[in-house]
Each structure stands twice: as C-alpha cells, then as structure tokens.
Image 1 (cartoon, rainbow, N blue to C red):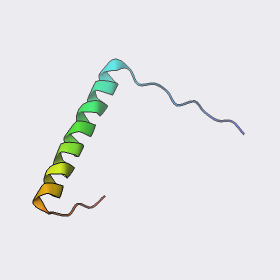
Image 2: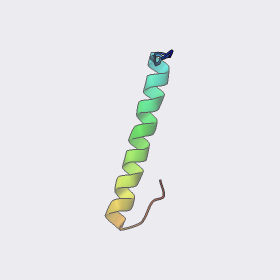
Image 3: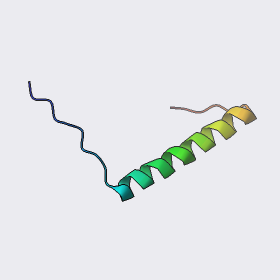
Length: 40
C-alpha cells in the first residue's frame, strides 16, 4: 500500500486558499445571521 504524501502548497496558492476560505466563512455567517439556508 503506497500512501502518497500531501504536497504543501506554495505561498501564492496558500494565500489564495486562505482568501477563499475567509470569503466562504463570511458568506455563510451572513446567511446564518439572516436566517437563510445554505446548501453544502
């Protein structure tokens, strides 16, 4: 059984992922406060 190690993203990729996570969290929090539903 060969387990491939997870590659570590470079700085630009990590910054993009962090930005996307922050945007999604902000949107989900706003929907939660407004009482709207979200499909995940």
